[in-house]
Image (cartoon, rainbow, N blue to C red; front, side):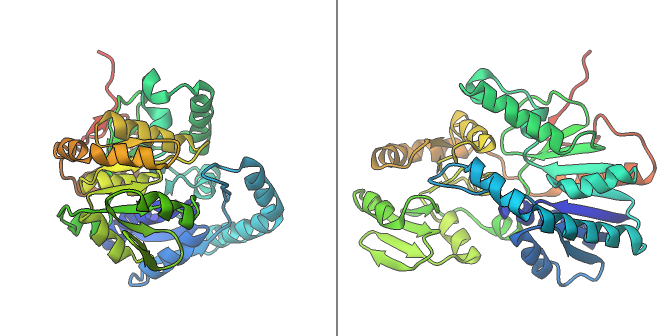
Length: 376
């Protein structure tokens, strides 16, 4: 099949997840054109350079700005409005290129990306959604999980729903599996890159800290007050100060430190959280304020007993989390090892159905940890 694949460029989690999906599609012989924005463009160009049946086009996507661990909505709006004329021109050029050069996709896959979905709408093509965000809209969450920010939940739910409505099917990657409330929805395990799948858990005594919000000097002073060894990523400099080591980022080194860590402290982004859970590493999650999806991830992490979460990172919170790390580690032993085979089975089934011209499937035959169930 000829597939147009859209990848949102905000953050790198979408890109690393899409890389796994794209390698499967390309290995199966499909011809793929990828449209992607931001840093994810350069990453995918390099990561897919060994395949001849793929083209990667850069588009302009929305950007988000943060200040002191909070989404800065005003600055984000300003930046996107300022760049909108250039963005529109670039995206129109890519649209024409895809539409006019004879590629003619049979199907669109979108990782929370609207440009490709719009192309599908205009050309009456089926869209397969592959992301983690749709869990907000397409599953049931009780009051405790939704939290006291009912308005925040409703706004997040509406935003996710509007992002990619009416898809052929929704494959929702997750390490937690609430009840699916909408048809054409299948929950699949986290989509893990090869390096994580090949890693084997060997717990040590150091703690990995990955954050970019707290100034490194303030963070180091907090960590030095605790009787543990810390390996800190995201500080943009290297060095050692007592029990705190500042590490230059290397994906290989980070995974090595993660698999051998006693615990990890980081934001509540889905990619790192799902990698930590899959490697059975207890996690303290610090969600970015006004990022509802991160709060949802963090609440499920705590409910399952895989870790804890807090709105702030301070010495007392960290000490209490580390005191309970053996408890969290014990709970994580119940999390089953899962590779990407469920993803591949579901995706291949959907491609076969779409190629045959079948109607949108309410329910897939492939095994999966979460599916919509018709009322009896």
